[in-house]
Image 1 (tube, rainbow, N blue to C red):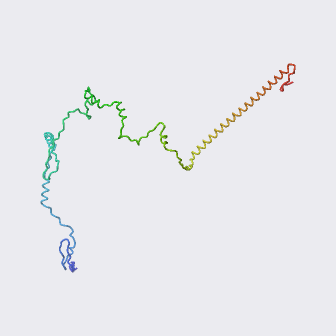
Image 2: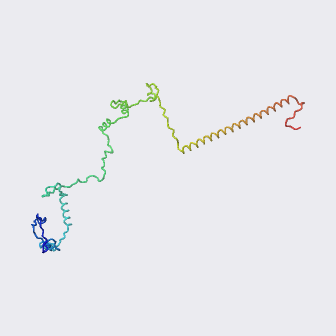
Image 3: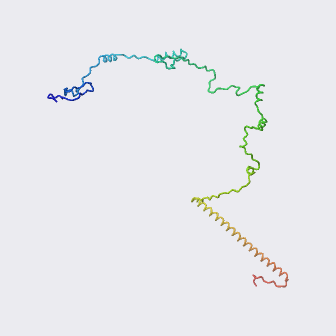
Length: 271
């Protein structure tokens, strides 16, 4: 820095300014004011041509047009051209846009309106049969006897004997055993693991067994009582028969002794 306050820079190599593309030579002097940017940039003056163009656009007046009349005219032209439409079918060069005319037409509605096409009357009804039709029907018709006769005809190409099992009245089992002598076969007895039933099943089984035991005991008691009653009845009858036999023997003895003999008193009588 020198006495005036300027910065004096010395360097062995020149310093190149990137923005301006100039080089600062050794021993050049740079002021402090040049190192600082100005406080405010100067205002740029407006372009007179742009200002004149904007003023001219402001003074223009807008014009409103009705497009409905144009649409009506286009519609009338389309009807007058017998339904001819101009369509751009294929993209041509960008310089020329050619249009192709296509005639849109449909056949006139001559049939009856409806969604289903009605079939002719001959589809449902037939007229009087002619001799030719009768011959055709006879040639195509097949009777029941013809069907039975054709069922008896062999069909070699459709016979599959290996898929047919002939079963006789004796049964299929007997046919299989014919020609196969009986042979001994060892059968392995597999020990089945005993599985315990659930609690509810065990309770139900226990109740069922208890009911069966009670029923059996009741039947045994009834049978015993019946047998005792029969024994007592037989004993009583035997006693009655014995008493009657003694009475008959006593009566015979009294009759044989005669009327003179005193009648002995019975054991239960009082004298």
